[in-house]
Structure formats: C-alpha cells, structure tokens
Image 1 (cartoon, helix red, strand yellow):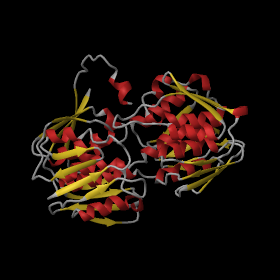
Image 2: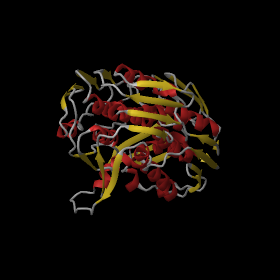
Image 3: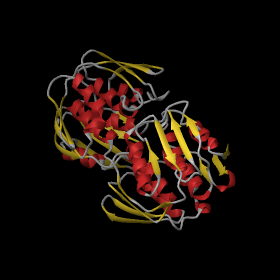
Image 4: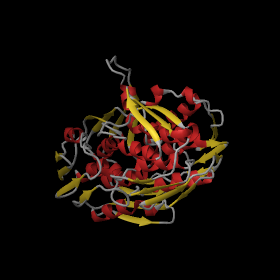
Length: 434
C-alpha cells in the first residue's frame, strides 16, 4: 500500500508538461470498440484508469500495442462480446461507455454497474433514457446493465437531456454513430472532451456535428473503420498544478495546454491575487503575494469545473477573509472537508455550500484521499502546510494524474512515495476504489 509523504513550505519553480485528458481518454478507448481496423491514439495519459480500460479490451480480444510513450494502437476487429471482464468493469466509472459501444458493435450489451469515486451517487438514468429512446430494451438487475437493440440495431431519435450530463452525452453519441437515421441530443453537455470524442469518432468515419454546443446531431453510418487521433491536454490536470502554485507560491510554466479551456480557472486565480500569463500552448502561473478570498460556484462547462472544487478549497484555506464554495453539480462532494480540518482548516460544509475562513497556515497531518480530486487537494494542502503531511489511499489519485509525484518533484516539491505492507481487511478496497 502506497502513501505520499509531503513536506510543506517549498515554493514551486520550473516547468511541468500536461498529459492527455483523462475524461476524453476513458471514452475514446471504449469507442475504439466500434471500429473494424486499427485506431492510433496519441497523447494517451498514463494513468490507472487508462490501463484498466485497455486491459478490459485486451481481455475481450482486442490487440493493443504501445508504439510510443503515449501512443497506442488498438485493433478491436477480433473482439468477442462474450469475453467482457465484469470484475474489471466494476472498478471504473467509465465502464458505462461500453454500453454505447457494445450496442453499436453487437446490437446488445451486458456491463457491470460502474464504480469510481465515492463522492456521490453516479446515476446512469440519463444514459438509459437515451438508449431507450433509440429503441433499446434496458434492464438493470443484480449489479448489471442489460441492453438490446430492436432488430439488432439502434434507431436514430431526438433525445432531450433532463439534466446536463457529460457521460450520457458521450455515451449516446458513441451509440448513435451506427444507428439507423439521425440522432439529435438536446441540452447536451459542452465540455472540451466531448468535442474531442466527437473528433475521434469522425476520424473513424462517423458523422457527428455540433459537439461543443447544446445540440449534437449524429447521422448514423453503416460501420466505422480505423482512425488516428491525438487526445487534447487535460484541463483538470493543468488546473491542479495552477492551484498548487497558488497554494505554495512560486512561478511555474505549465506546458501543453489549451489556454481557452482554462479561462474560468485562470479568472478565479487572478481574482485571488495570482498572476497568470497565457501563451499559445502554455500558461505561466506566479504567486508572490498573499491570497485574497473568493467565491466559487461549480457549473457545467464553460462554468467553473466541479473537478477543480476540492483543489480550490485547499487553496482558499489560506486566503485572507471568508470564502464560499457552492457545488452546483454533485450532491455530496465535501467528504474531504474533514481531512482538511485535521490540518487545521476552518471550514463549515452544509449541503452544497462550504464556508472557508482563511488561516495563516495549515499544519501537516495524516490524511486520506477520499476520491481522485480530493486526493489532489490533500497534496496541495500538504505543499503549503507546516510540517509533514501523509496522504493515504493514493490509488484514487493515480486514477487520473500521470506521474503526479514525479512532476511535482521536478518543480521543487518535497514529496515522496512510501510503500507499506498491506493490512488484512474484510473488504476488497481495490474493487471499491476503481
């Protein structure tokens, strides 16, 4: 069992390079199942969620070849539906994208209910409503999702999303690429990784239009062929390093980013007194002055991302004055607050609102990563705390951050990975954490 040991007090200086977007990659890999032929995917993030999805496809019969540090070729021509590894599907939230790709490829699907971070309920009702509208019979029982298309192929449909859902938008988009006729998704999510997945599908011969707007139109095609695609940089990884510099102080050039995707994050940091300079594909973050308070409300893109909420909460713990965070996406994303309180943070969380009273400094303490982004928040808190912070359950962090410790070390953080013997436990923690 690994844990991170962070010794605070060191400002961050240097350069850090951002990897491919996790939230795009975990949909693109299942989407490759739709193709007859080789899909070449570049800028693949090297994270545990990607490793798990590639393992699922390989167990189903796909040929996966690494041809560069971040370049993979995936050939799903020989995939067999009957070989789906349900034990692995349960360990990852993104397994629900296999519902759409299996329906598109085989006309039916059986997947385990998705796992993932435990910060709130992960309903798939929008996914089910969408594929049901396209003519699939869907049943959820015994921890599995069963879906079958009428006559072996989905039919295009007009689908209105009751609630903006990134996952459902992408899943329906994937399934609709080989449906009969046109599918229109209204009130669709607009995140950059939705555009990226649409571009990947189009590289394989799909006809997806309007991704990045609230209306996505997909004209079904007979089949998909192999394609090539380079995944966009990870908005949340970049934002996390921006938050780390804001918390610890210093000056860091964050490379391989799309600055436009970081507008709302950069705007909030400027409001807090952090200097931001944008270049063509990089962004410079500098903090030398005390932090000012700020109020944040998370919203669907282009609003402030919910996946940056815990990291900013850690930063605001040391901002002068009272800050308020309102969570506008998830119902239960403040479980990590009790961990920050162990470090002396003054936070009161109630429902979707957290009130943070800034203090002079946090104090190092043993804490746990409650989920992926909360884990990053614990590391950020540790970087600016007095003393030593030990972060447990770091498998959550490694689900979505590529070489997190190595990259932080390169910009001056005093952080190390310590491996301790596993203790016998009555539950399979790895299965829950996936």
